Length: 113
Image 1 (tube, helix red, strand yellow):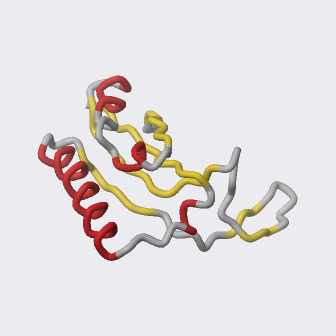
Image 2: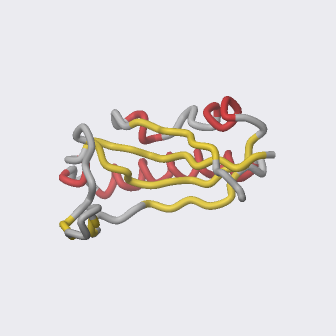
Image 3: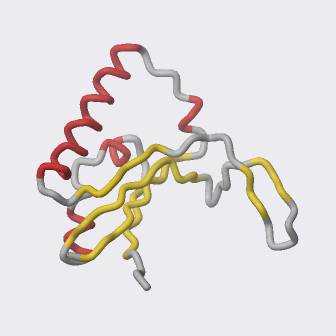
């Protein structure tokens, strides 16, 4: 199996959403179920949500506050996966809660030297 990174993206204003405790519980269960399914298949290596506090260092060494926003989107988290192919890795995105929130998922192969 090869290793892939699943990069989770959302609208840059998603952090402004203030869910109720009930919504938090429902969303947490959705994420746990989806991630648990991938883990049960033996394809999950690691997953993390990415915080909002960041620094962006430019080529001229200028430092600015992040997060880095492209086309109104920010990276919100990632997963490291094992899969037979990029298509297999992409199929694991099925049911991801970020897609229900209007987010996007990018699958990238990891280059091992």
